[in-house]
Length: 350
Ligand code: AQP
Image 1 (cartoon, rainbow, N blue to C red):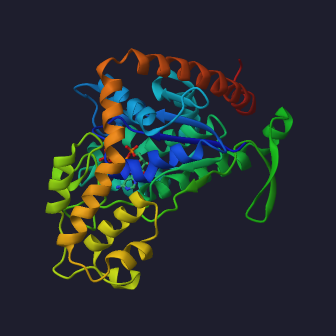
Image 2 (cartoon, rainbow, N blue to C red; image 1 turned 180 degrees about the vertical axis):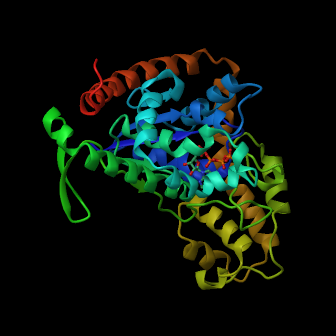
């Protein structure tokens, strides 16, 4: 079975973008794959070092996974810091990756802002740790939102450079596989990961500005729908969502140059598991005053069961803690085996 890995940072309230871009895909992929889903707490301290309640945030992401339908018995749910091999492999990858590669990452530029010299070294090295998260299990498929595409390309570059630089050592260790990189046949250790990004809303945008992604760290709570919002809040936020004065177009072409309209139609399509064209054949020609309440109803219908199950799981966190502990142990056993091979390839004594 293909091995799927993905992670979510415990850096704030989960929102509809995280759900549609990532968590809902995690749930669907369980059927035909072996899946490892991680609360990436080591990543959470890259942009902001001190958190009020990091443990609570970690538990709430795990609760969101379980409430959304991830099965922690058939698959693995754990938090990153419980498996030290992520940080170990990230160190090796820090020595494989080039500083220039990291400097080009748009997420780093966005999060570091103008004062780049003062950003943490961890923020710069974030994609190297992300590559390690995936490759410490030699995972091949990674469901993420469109915003993470550049980081996944970098994970491929790191895997490729490691495979080429250590080709002879990999052959000598006998732990590699034959693969083709471009046209070149090589004997590599790490697979080249495939991003899984498809769907009508691969990037959910802010409700206040259709050109910015919906984000946990946006200071305006009106910009996002949180998984813990109740029906009234969802209705209020969708009612207040920015739109243009025209009604809905009758086809997808008509959404061009209208980012806010495009975003709301995309959200509806993703929630209803339809295409944007199908949504427009139903609502084309209607005003937003008709479309917005329909969208709010649909969002409440999809999110309410998840919200109530999350609340239940967070009331007594012993169940979540037990899931994370068991998942951490199972993940560590797998990561240890891969790291033993990496130590042999690099030439460390063990
Ligand atoms: N707006 C989005 N649309 C689609 N997918 C999204 N994701 C995040 N925002 C959107 C996807 O959610 C997964 C987990 O994200 P994360 O928490 O690990 O990191 P992030 O991308 O930094 O998320 P946020 O919400 O924007 O947080 P902040 O504000 O802290 O930066 C990823 O698969 C991501 O693609």
